[in-house]
Length: 158
Image (cartoon, rainbow, N blue to C red; front, top):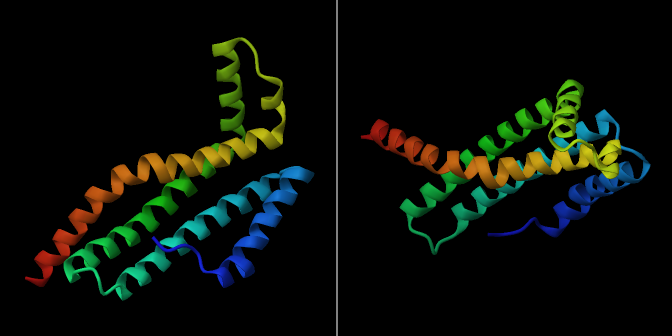
């Protein structure tokens, strides 16, 4: 798959990464965490839309294959964004964080020193949301959903 073009990376992605790095060094507030989550969603969605356009330009693929891949990319963009937003919003809630911390303490009897650091907790939660959304939940939902949508569109045309 194509990667993010250099101009987009230089103008949009690099400043976001710098902001995230500075936030980690100086302390992550709730607003910083929301910004990082939103940036991740925006970047993933942009990459899927970019891939959609590039697939349309690819003459080596058959029209049927192009349509399926394009439908997959658009479905993937929507599902990933929804899951990341939902999981991030739930997990960034202070009550949920406190409950997770208390549950872990009950299970293990202690909390590791690095887990007490708020920056570490927020960062691992955000990474967890992205991994959960992109690598586990989205592939399970997107493939059957894409097939279903494609079949419905073909039935409509017929």
